[in-house]
Length: 382
Image: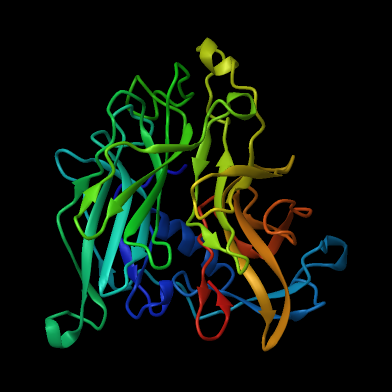
């Protein structure tokens, strides 16, 4: 997880499938992304990957680096990066909230957006008081008084009601299933006696490492009420106790299967100080939670990892065609790394098994979360 002092939402067209929808990027991260992308001539706010055909090698990569991925990736270059972009502030820090990070945005079936993020009263993540906040926004056209087409008027921030008898909440992920009146909010919740190596950096002596149980709560849209208690989808106790972290929004495959990307993280466990940390013996890796019954039950699949870097915060999309040519569906996964490049792998069996993971040499990644989305109607991946 990466610190971000405040939360911004950048206006984008056709993202999430609706005009004027939004993407999120911390302003503090924007400058580091600019520096990384300007060296490659890539626009910070317009980086996309287009699937051009089958059988090509990745642009800029030698054949010896090829893997099961047969896509030809090409970054769409849109000029030099610039911080002069439209900004809609969802929320800003104040006397009570000094830390905001990991936002998620979901579009409802009208002009309404919902955003959620993790927040705390101290100026860094890891605090035991870390919780989830959300806000509801309405898109306004120029004729309705908006400053620009697709401008969003956001309401006051509110706390997601969660039990206060366990640890901090992490990594909210919003998801509205088709034909549903319930907005799902996936997140991770810490518990137990293990604490983080970064107690001094976290500004809180009671510093928690990222992750825990992966959970879900739901907002009933007709009434505006949240579930009385969240449900555990995948326990921290599984796989030798390693904390699990929700990462990006789930996808629904053409078969009807649901896939929720997540990762297992133990890099910040303070095993020298806390005996409870020593009991967590799982392996850091990424995978997906799989549901074949529309979210009623889940199981974990995939152990995507590398000896060269951590691979966390996976994002996934189903690929069903190249240009106008239909192909056998596959699931593409992109991952954050500490090796200055995004990494990728794919699954040909609906997320159960994953191929060899490899670097995408033409896609810079400054150890920052990626969110992989399909843009319509052109089929580009952004």
